[in-house]
Image (cartoon, rainbow, N blue to C red; front, side):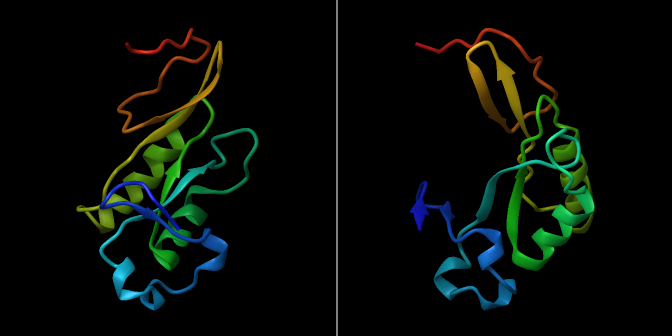
Length: 122
């Protein structure tokens, strides 16, 4: 198990998890994430937004949908989840192609233009 901070912990992959009620009590206070998955808004995925939402409801693992050069899938997933749970942590994401490779953008409000030169902040 990987601890990212005091409040965030990553457990097993979704396929190894079952009913969220079977999670240890010590894990209940932690958020669980799938840190990188694509929906059918990416050319390399056929996973529908509906399937991603169903997996979240079954496992309790928050999906960070990082489609290629688009936040559309992420917007759709959190739009659906937010209707049934307004307190859910909304982390819209995108996998952005840059001149130096791909970068995952989190907490996005809009698409990031692809193929830009990446730069590091000092």
